[in-house]
Length: 298
Length: 226
Image (cartoon, rainbow over all chains, first blue to last red; front, side, top):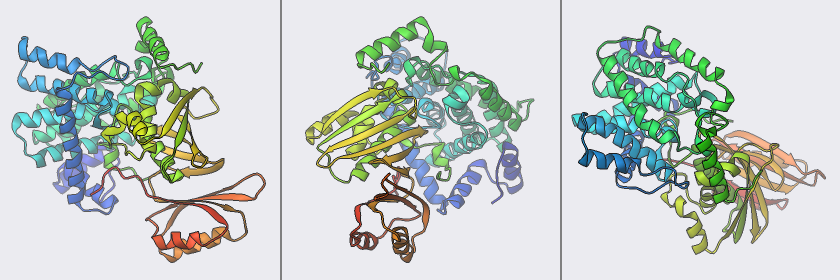
């Protein structure tokens, strides 16, 4: 199979071969690891099932994280949708509920699918699972969507490290949102170009996202950000399905994102030396937790 | 040597949260250390450095390391209860937190006290990747992605040849090989990463070599088995 190094290669190959992005993805994975496409799909299904399981557990838990900082946001949102008022549809509600349910399972040491990372694990399932339910998408379509997400993440990862310490939150929640956006266009049965456009429209909107976790933990601001970025992904998919395109070509957007990541101060890349981590309250929390856990490493 | 990047590094792996480096990486380090130790320990001490020390409790790094030593994999939901499991199995454990910037940001020393003493050190490199870089002072480079043979032996000319010949005769390809020896040159170590698992026959043959006093045949850590 031809080497796919960029979004341009991917769209070209899809258009010339008539294959959808997920097919290109599963075939290349099968070829690289000398396994059958069926085995690739079975493993994707295993991960998809793990995502659904995390959502089910997360929707029914209020258990706090080890630090006690987070853990009951999903329960609050769920109660609000049961009793409160909202202008938004069930589909919108489910996207943010499922994203929160998943990321909260993560912080309470539950089983999740790092997608692409643990701190961004709620975004792709939030979009794929919630909206597959909305359109009654068969399991095979959901697998196709997750494969599409994987292909997008893989191409971005050629240039941008999927790690907050290197690229800031751009490389974690940002990439997760781009993956989710492409996955949703696959559920909509959009074209390869529309899938890629959805991904890069998302990326343009997360440029420069800092990674400034309070006390160095994957909680503040990560948990709530998963809900926000799931909606970012949905917005991008809607625009792409309308035929709206990024003025800047996809691969140039990824280059720009990589450059921005490099230019960001190390203090804003997972080191907890600036931003929310060093606010008055951020520092107080850090100190309280150090005392609580008896960490006198200084 | 890095494993080939797979799709499942992007839409996976399936792990226990909250952090791939501080939780899943810790489990992998514990798991490898436990396999290298090779038996059920009576007591074990973990010394966590730098970021592992500072944010470890909040990320469950302690539970991950201990759970790994107990044999739990990165996606095992019992990791959360590692303390209780260790108590039930009669394993004593202790944690110490240190700052030492000569060490990797996510470094750990795992000291087994009894029934035999052994010290295993490693680093969590990010995205769940790890390396065990020291066993009893000898340098190694074990990442759990490949089946690995660990040997410590009395240094003698021809040992590398004897071991590699045994492996080659079984048609197993050596991916990487890492050798070291102690200051006096009396004892040496080999860490051999393989493309496929070694048949038991090779281990039996290795056991016949008097000079070798530690043999560990460590399977690759698989997150998904068909």
